[in-house]
Length: 278
Ligand SMILES: C[S@@+](CC[C@H](N)C(=O)[O-])C[C@H]1O[C@@H](n2cnc3c(N)ncnc32)[C@H](O)[C@@H]1O
Image (cartoon, rainbow, N blue to C red; front, side, top):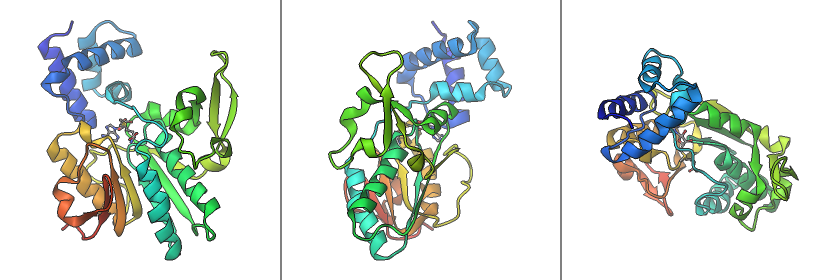
């Protein structure tokens, strides 16, 4: 097993490169991740590996090993209901289009759920959205590659879609090459063209977006990996990119913290920006 010194060294590297804060109760998890890192880098010597990372090598592999990428289509589905029923309707009424940022996109299920929601709204409402765009980022290059490929296992995901979404409209389906009776689904090109995937570390000192650039920011189930000071700092940077009247969606156990006086809660972890944070 790993020594306390090795575990702390891994903690320090995870924080330095991603902001992920691993408390004292995470020793088992860190050990499992270090085992995975040894396999990924094909070495048995964890001190040597951490030395490489400290010298600026294999950082992407290290980060990718320490991120938790759990996600699914239409996770916390009430956010997609709100997007369709409130946000899109308001944007149509004001003929204003929508610019959306998805800030911890993982393997892509979340941004594709956003796109399917917008497309579905456009097919249902008499007047469609004049235009929309979606930028989706994550720190982890492996998940971004998966997201850009847009290929998922149908049998694992079939139950995630709400009844108002017809997956056949958005995915092509083909037999799974190695699991008999199962299927793979691939996001249709027309939908894939509507999202831009980029790598971005939420811990970066500044973000490559303008002030008040977005109408909607999704920041779900990622703040939980940071300490409270970092959560506040990230929220403030994201908040600056959100328009007045824009919507911030947070994950089920996350809260706006110091931004609470500047937002109005309008649903389960749904916050509308009412004032600029100064
Ligand atoms: C648990 S997943 C959540 C995915 C999705 N937002 C959802 O709610 O289903 C957390 C994601 O945050 C990403 N992440 C972790 N640290 C990050 C950082 N510093 N900057 C950007 N993304 C980060 C991870 O790579 C991972 O894909």
